[in-house]
Length: 320
Image (cartoon, rainbow, N blue to C red):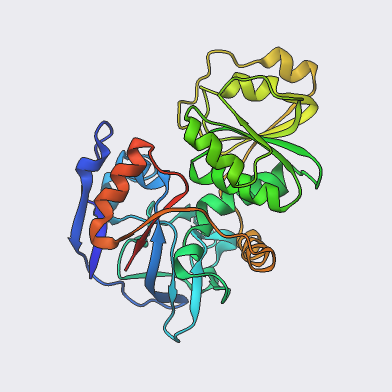
């Protein structure tokens, strides 16, 4: 079957390890289902995999891709939960949970096999392309906002780095949930787009906000860390799920964190139950993922290049 896969690890030039071509079709195994992929979306996790983060040489070649929507063996339309081994389903109880592409072959292929427990029904109102955007970036944003930040309608949130998959999702989900959302971006066009998507206002990184916020959604890391901390009200919550600009900020702001009793919460992906809630949220509110562009699988390299250059606004989707 045709697939986009990591053939080599190259920490400095990750796209050197990306290959497109034939790979073996998945082998049936008890308790797992084979899904015919209709659409899959890119994440920064795929670039990190090509750099060797979370993916070791012993697992190469590895088909990339965490997210997908398609049809199972019975013809049912499904969405994949990307975390394998949650609660031990489909793997040994002693095996640690892992994302697709870290140990198990991913979704950038004609077919993928996952534990049957990991499949959720695709809402009829969502296209395959829209549904394929949800299991990683949008699920991460959903968990950051509603589980870890604990915000409620009327609260205010700062989203750093408008344009990225998680940040874009947080803006749209936050607005739909009745939050006052502020966003930042270095790019003026992205700031305009953030407001169009529902942000109350958008600013250059580091700019003074109209008031201190209840929570910050942080995925940028070192470049925005100090601004995130100083933008919080006393007792506010900073939720971080990534550090695309680096994980060692020049100023950790420790004094401010303890003196104002700020909360710093790490967040990674989400549970199957949270994904089910996110699917229901999208279906009932009419919220839909922001898609930057849709490409056929045989043009996957174009999508990877756009993601690596940081030119996208929203999700890049591959169709099979």
